[in-house]
Length: 319
Picture 1 (tube, rainbow, N blue to C red):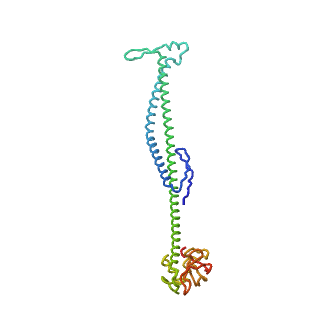
Picture 2: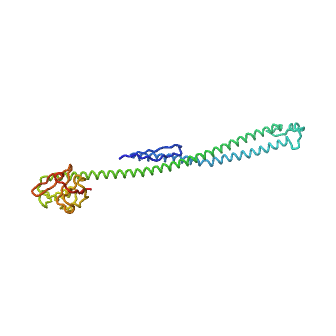
Picture 3: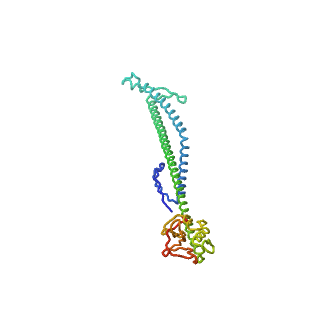
């Protein structure tokens, strides 16, 4: 028997796909192996992500250190800029003296030489430095945010891969259970078939054995092998061919199996004449409405017809 098993739809989380698993009864091992390979693949991906995650703390530290350094530098520059602006525009300055103040200069040392730079140039330089530092800080903050987003995404991917593994393992367990049940069912069917075949062969062997006794004389109480009475012939055949002792006369032979109607008889079954418990004759059914029996004194083992001499019931000895 070959059947097809339809498993429930499985969502493959990590890949964002939906697969319908259709497993034929003779491909359990292939499907199980496929899931096991996918489990190994997912476990490898998870290990890779975990290794990558291990580098994030140092990356965070490095970015935070840079941000701190740039922040301090920005703070210093903003302070210096504020100082310069106060020099240029003191709190009590008036519009009339602003041009005069903007023309003031300070003297700085550079390579052992004095250099005069206008305050407006110094302010512009500081403003540029502050702008650059602010831009660099924004870029670093963006990198930090990107790293956090990447870490979160990879964490979600890892969780999805783990869910996939659980799903695959569940599918494998289900397949293994179905495979076991299928194999047990196949074994049961095979055993029943073998039993039926063995029983059919035994029935045919009994009939062949009965044919082999044709022509041997009837002798009352004889159990064979050279002569028989009716019950002696049946006991001889069942004992020597089927290995079953059914009794040496008709009444105990009635109880050697299941009582059935004559119309239900199969080859090898016993046919009885008379009422149950007081039968007086027995034969073996050989099919096609015929039987073989040792009929009476002065006669021989021969084939008879149910239509000519109808039995009252039958007994299925073999089951």
